[in-house]
Amino acid sequence: MKRYLIILGFIFFCFLPASVGAQTPTLEPPSTDSPKPTKQPEPSGNADVDAELKRKKREYEEKLKQLSSQKNTLSSQIDYMDTQIYLTELKTQQTEKQIAQAEKEIDSMSNRIESLDSSLDHLSRTLIDRVVDGYKQRRVTLFDMILDSENANDLLGRVKYQKTAQENNQKVLFQVQQTKSNFQDMKLLREKKKRDLDRYKDILTTQRAELLAQQTQKQRLLEVTQNDEKVYQNLLAEANRQIESYKSFVQSSGVSVISAGALGEGEGGWYLSQRDARWAGVTMGNSSETILNVGCFITSIAMVFRSYGYDVTPVTLASDEKFFVPRTAYMYHPSRFNGGWPGGKNYRNITAADVPSYLSRNIPVIANVFAPSVPGGEHYIVLKKQEGGDYIMNDPIYGPDKKVSDYYTLRGVYAVFD
Image (cartoon, rainbow, N blue to C red; front, side, top):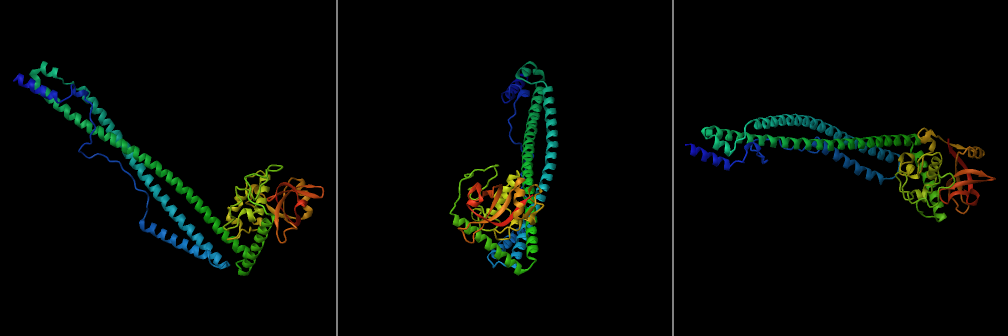
């Protein structure tokens, strides 16, 4: 009998590691249920609401295209602006939905992460307790069975118990690893959702600013035209006249685009050219006219603010539609934006007699000029200082520090920002 038990013990020993307590478990998924990685879907919100928003956006985008091709009347322009405003409102609604959905998902993920953290803590403690308990049991080897053959039955029972305990420990260890993986995946997904949320909020801020600008632009047009079609048509006629005059001047001068900063910065370091490759091809407002062809006035404004130390370029003005009569490159009178210019500066017209006084205080003067060789053409430059009976100018076309009399005749329109 003893020999039989010894042989049986030897057979068990052959199918077990040399020391049961020292066995390294092989991690295979257990057959019992364990936590699975959870991936949250992208926010979609209510499908019907999303579909309706998209449908309306397509509808009003198409309407904008149709309105842009219609005859430019005040009523059609207001209709265009109203459609543009409504389209922007739809975009803000969609972004607000995305923000609400992202916040909801982040909250849900935070709760899930907290639950996983609790589960991980519980499983880890359980595993540690089991490991400690296992090491408290004496390791059973072949020598135990040979030297203590009288108690072979008890020894074999302990082997079986330890093997079962080890299998259960494998399952707990797998659950710990799986829960830890889920925990890390969920944290990464939550961070991505937070980045999405920040992006949505930035988009919403931009959309709300765009909406306010559109509403303000509409209100400004109604104020300028007094909601009168005749006044609006007169405004368009003046816009066309001035734009054509600028274009005629540039074309007659025969100039073209130059490389960035090619004419230098001039005395004081604030010269800018409308011909500069960095912005010559940029369109003004929502028109098709470029800074090269009709941007002398906004380039002159940009130079004045640079002389005051502000980082303003022709693009700063050209890219902001609020400055222009809709669908034209014709700028509203700059005094309409007083209170909003850099440094709190205000635009105002002055007389010819006032010019020397301002220049003596280092306040540049914007002046309207014409070239005798270009009938009907007009242009804007910046006067820098008086020199005898002449003025030194920064010319957006020809360059810095030029004598006015070498190129132009002053037309008698002067303005400053002070």
